[in-house]
Amino acid sequence: MIPTITAFEQSPDRGQGLARDMPVRWAFEEVGQPYNVRLVSFSAMKERAHRTLQPFGQIPTYEEGDLVLFESGAIVFHIAEHHAGLLPNDENARARAIGWMFSALSTVEPVIVQREASLYLENHKVWHEERLPIVEDRIRSRLDDLAARLGDAEWLDGAFSAGDLLMIQVLRRLDGADILNDYPNLMAYVARGEARPAFKRAFSAQLALVPTDEVL
Ligand SMILES: N[C@@H](CCC(=O)N[C@@H](CSCc1ccc([N+](=O)[O-])cc1)C(=O)NCC(=O)O)C(=O)O
Image 1 (tube, rainbow, N blue to C red):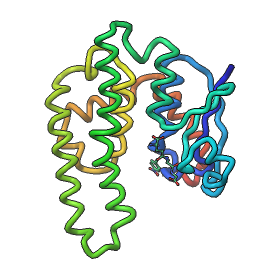
Image 2: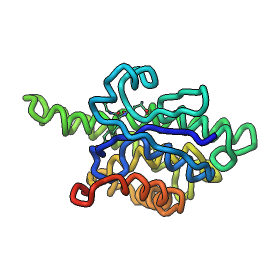
Image 3: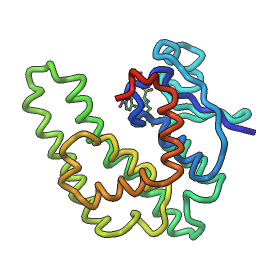
């Protein structure tokens, strides 16, 4: 059975592939699993029908038969559990790769999302100018440690895994910011992820939905 995910009907990132359907698309492409996409408008996301799938009124969701999932990380994990190619077979290596999935979403992404909130939602607040540098310092602290751990390695822990997929997707949210430029090995790490044929297929698929005149 071919799973169906939901994605934005109108991409707020205008084709940059930063919304969270992107890691799910990427995971499907890495394991060679076809998938269908149901596009959802901002208003429809908040309706009861969608909230039965995703209680917070967001995308993505995953439907396959009588299984409904939400949380992009959980969906990527489900895909990785049911197909080869995203998690190692070795028990300890698999556990470490899953650890990196959590690290991406609960240690690195939150400070990056705080910066986006500061820039796009709080930029009119009187304390915005004072807060942004504090948030950006928190990001640099995380990137210092991540860059030190990655070093010159190709991926975070041996072969490419779902942990790398999610970490690279999180780091891509800094695209356009100067911050990542200070970490050449992390820039190269993201570039390696973006060079993967599966990433390119996923990126093209989400870009194809964006009207040409809206692409950033
Ligand atoms: N923890 C959930 C979070 C899901 C989530 O944040 N979904 C967002 C889209 S991806 C987040 C996102 C949005 C826009 C950009 N962008 O660059 O424009 C990037 C990422 C959403 O539906 N937002 C609508 C709403 O909350 O009302 C998950 O990982 O699935």
